[in-house]
Image (tube, one colour):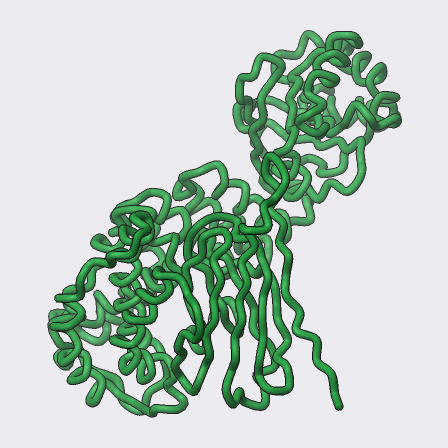
Length: 469
C-alpha cells in the first residue's frame, strides 16, 4: 500500500518568550475528487494585499491534507493552489490557537466538525455568494456569460445589501468582516469580466451595480491590504470604470485602457490612500523584466512609494535586475548615524560618495580602516568628496560599533544598518565584505564594486570623479 506523508508547517513565531502550545493552529482538510493535476495545496498569509506562502501540503491518496502553524498575527489567511488564481482559493480567519476543519467539493467548500465563530460567519457569507462565484471564477466549468450572470447578480443584490453585521464574540473580526464582504463581492463580480467568455458586455449592457464601482470608494483606507488580491482587484476596477462609460468611443476606450497605469499612478490618480497607491506602483513594477525597464519606471513613478517598507521592496526589485554597471542610478538607502539621525545616500547629491560596507567582526574590513583614514586625509580639502561607512553589524552590537568608531577615530559619515542591513545588502548584492561603492555627483554609479582604499587604483579613480587633472 502506498504511503503518503501530509506535510505541514510549524512556523514558530518566537516573540519574547516560550510559545504556548495553545497558540498552535491545526488545519484538517479533505478535497473530495480533486482533478488529476491537483496534488497539493498551500497555506498563505495575506501581506500588503498579496499572498505570502507559509507552507505546502501534499494531498494524501484520499484527498486529505493538513497544516500545523502558529499564526503570525490575527487575521485572514488563504488556503489555495497558488498565490494568484481565484480558483480553489479559500479564505479563513485565524487567531493564535484557532483550528479549522473543512472539505472541498467541486467549486465550493463547507466546514466540518468544530470551527470558530469567525469561520462560521465566513461560511454563511460564502453560501450566499457562491452561486455567483461559481459562474465568475470557475469559468471553465460553468461557461457563463453576462447574459445569465447579470440577472443572478441583480437577484442576489437585495440579500447582500441587507446582510447583517457579523455578531461573533470577536469585535476585531466583526469590524474587518464589513470590509471583507465589500471587497469579496466586488472581486467576484469583477472576475466575471476579467476571465475568458464567449461573449462580453458592451458599455450599454452593464447593470447599475457596475456603474457604482469606483476606485476612490475602495481605496480610502489600507483595509484593502488585508484582502488577498486586493491590489489586483483595484486595478481591474479601474478598467471597468472606463468600460461602463457610455460616452466613450471605442478608440477613446482603447486609449484609456492602454493608459491605465498612468491614470492610477499619475497626479490625477483616483487612489485616495497614498499607501495603496504605493502598493499599486509595486504591482506594476513587478512587470519590469530588465534594468532598462525598471529604471525608466523608477524615473516616472518613484514618488508613489509612500513608506520605508515600500522603498525597500522596490529597491530589492531594482537590485535583482541591476548589474550595477557604471552609469546606473545608485539605489538609495537610509540609516542612522552615531547620533541616531537618519542619513540617506541621496542627501549627498552633487558630491562624490565613496561607500565602505563593513562590520566590526570582519578582519579585512578593519585592515582597510587605516588606509581609508589616509585616503580621507588626502582629500580633506574637497567639500565635494564624501567618505561614508555603513556597518552591517547586528542591532545588538551597536555599542560595539560605536566604541570602535570612537576608538579608531573614524571620520566621515558613519552609519549603522543593524537589522536593516538588507536595505543595502540586497539591492547591491553584497555577498562579502568589505565592499566599496563609488557614486558620482549625479547620483549614478561610477563603480558598484570599487577598489579598496589600500589599492593603487582608488586615488586616480577619485580624482577623475572629482574632475581633478
